Amino acid sequence: MKLLTHNLLSSHVRGVGPRGFPLRLQATEVRINPVEFNPDFVARMIPKVEWAALLEAADTLHLVEVPKGPIEGYEHDEKFLRQMHHVLLEVRTGPSLASLATAG
Amino acid sequence: MDQEAAQLEKRHVHDVYESTAPYFNDLQSKAWPRVRQFLQEQKPGSLIADIGCGTGKYLKVNSQVYTLGCDYCGPLVEIARSRGCEVMVCDNLHLPFRDQGLDAIISIGVIHHFSTKQRRIRAIKEMARVLVPGGQLMIYVWAMEQKNRHFEKQDVLVPWNRALCSRLFSDSSQPGRKKPCAHPERSHPYPPPCSVCSCSVCFKEQCHSKRSHSMDYEPLMAGTCCAAISKDGEEENGFYNTLGKSFRSWFFSRSLDESTLRKQTERVRPLKNTEGWANSTICIQPSRHSSLDLDHHEPFSTTEQYLDEDVFVEMSQKQLEWPRAPAAMKHQHGDQQGEVRRNGDGNFLEGTNASENCVNVGDVEGGHPSASKILRRISALDSTDSNPEETISVEEQQPNILDSRAFMRYYHVFREGELYGLLKEHVAELHVLSSGNDHGNWCIIAEKKDNWG
Image (cartoon, rainbow over all chains, first blue to last red; front, side, top):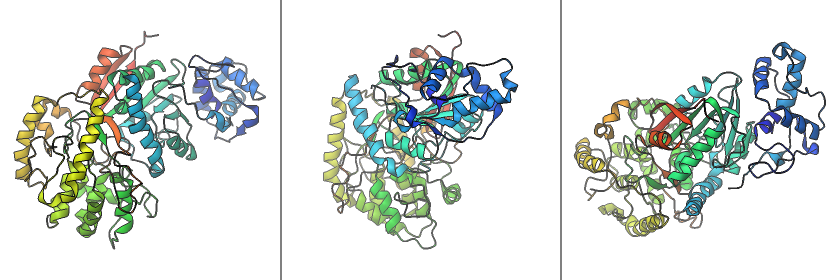
């Protein structure tokens, strides 16, 4: 799954989340899937990002060049947007996380 | 009760979808126009979830938004994923999303699979939880009130017959005839399996053109394409012969898709026996009229009786809600019957003691004051995601393939106003913006209230 998706999930921290399931990202299962860059789209995603979760995920996956937070004027900062685009939409975690069957 | 409900849903929703998922491959069904519109109207950059996304037909409607698909059924999720969608397996009652993370949610043909009111409420509340204040939720559920078919009860099991479909479209040779539906195994050039087979997309262009001639006012079930076929008048015999073989164990409550068979029978007068079969398969009233004993139906009577009774006894034991048909509906039956007969509508009511039977509700709307609110049908698909199932096939060649009760999907069909009432009374965090009927579905758009946590 994409990290943006991961970011929307309720359990980001290591261990068990409020819904009762752990989300553990595995560094060995990272893939990069090129996605066409759409700056407007990325800019609109920025306010919705939960940064703590994103940074932890990025850390776990050993990603580099991940912004630490929204910078001022990010909407027009192409470098920032491209980095976020890459992190949120192009980095994919492996299939093990793609199925999140919650406890019924 | 919750556990029983969960078990029922496992058996008659989850297991069925899981088993039948391969036949939903590709274009499972057409995207409802109003749903598409809802998605396209969302602001660019919105985060949207399709809860109960199936094979993901709505996930790529709007490229300016980020759409996630969720479904309980692993195989369906895999199909969606193979199409490049961002999907995951999850449970509507326990969504894995954080609070207020999503700008919009669609729930198309999902809530009606929950077997108790409480679970339906929980599912809706769960979706409300993950919505941002001001975020919108669109819900589609199958309507009890249908234009050309009739549900006697709100809790129904609808069979699915893959084998029927495969038979129809692989066996019959139809020179010069367009084949709107494909064999589920895709031996035909047209991918979408027929709705009759519960697959759905029959709505290829060929179907459309045919439909416009004859079925404009039918809620178009997947089966429509099948109807279209017969209307061309070439294969009816083959079609019905094939149909007949597979209709050994019809049972129960009004299946969605009679439009197919009903329409066919209208055109196919000369086929005496098969016509009768088709008619009877359309509306079978389980417990009471399990013997469809029109003269031509010997093959049915006994088997069916057993099956009907069996099905519904089981259901009642599960303490499901079984609201009685309102008096109004019964009254309508009376009216409708006369009308049906006048219409010469090939309905098997003619000649049967069908007072309780599924009436060909040719004009349900007449009986509902709110009929005027019912949207004009455009074309397309009726009801829910997968629709059409006509029957359980019990083919001789494959006696073990389908248990007579296998692949029956549970639905709680909604009465007019029921969904609205549910939200109003039990989901205070949502404010209903609009509600209406779309192709045999009650649909609602609601908004998460701003001052809600």
